[in-house]
Image (cartoon, rainbow, N blue to C red; front, side, top):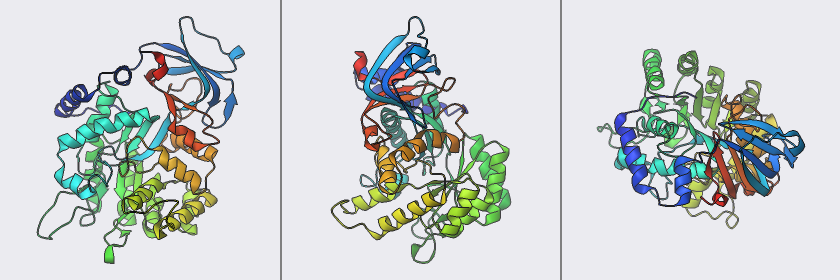
Length: 440
């Protein structure tokens, strides 16, 4: 994890907002401060370790790390530790969300364009404080945020505020503004006006090098590029950058130790991005058998963002389970299954922000509905995303030595993914942020 310095003004705003909106309750106190106890013995009925489920295991946490895992007779109990009884529950790694926008809120509340053009940075930052709190409460302890959509570098300030303990939230990997080709991205209006954009425009070798380095220097953990956008004839998705331009972004990013995520819907944009060396493809709607084979061969992951399109259609009046599936849903199901069959690594990432923060599990439920098993989806949200995001030396599994990011849910999420809706415990870095049975 990288620790970047944000602006004093942004941190001041976050601190004041946290004080103003935090409800006066034991739950909010736990969320804001965490539990100060340094040692725990967690006693669930089952442990999902990121790969498989084990019955009757205990987990010991000391400080911010997991120190012991296994059957009770093999787990030494530290003196002075606090027991957390989790009867009937499964303990598992904190979930890792791969595609979010903490500075957006659902489009049925306010359209994307109106959020970018009309909402103040202060309002958007204040909303983000609530969004990250709700996300943590939902069991997401780590999250990759893929663009501020016109809110500058506010994600860097939010990340730093979380790390400083000013506000509760998941560990953040941020991308700041994201990179788009000139003329491709929104908002757009009368051609004589220069409207603010939802990302940063750059073109050609020198410009792309400068902008990529600038975003990294201002706090980006990953770099996001829009390899295509809806700027073709009649609004069709068409590639925006050449293959060489994408290679430039990847080369600059990787020389700094960062990876690149590419928004890509059209088959040609996906191909260019994969050949250029990006680590993840976001959306990937029009992938072909050849594209899926290429991604599988090069170990490039797909974040399918199923919940985004699903939610947008419901905002337009579609009633899932009542009305026939729209063409967009039929096509998305087919492309997702084809990617699965080809062995493409699947990243759990729903584009949350298009729909409500804290309801991230919708994406996992759709992944299961569209073709994954519950066990496959659960692995994707834990050990799978830890590997894809290159965090598996610290997160994504229940194993001694890893950070104590742990959640507990009722029942068996490896058999029924909807069990993730019943979060009973949230621990991040050894601190308890949600445990209503604690009596605090």
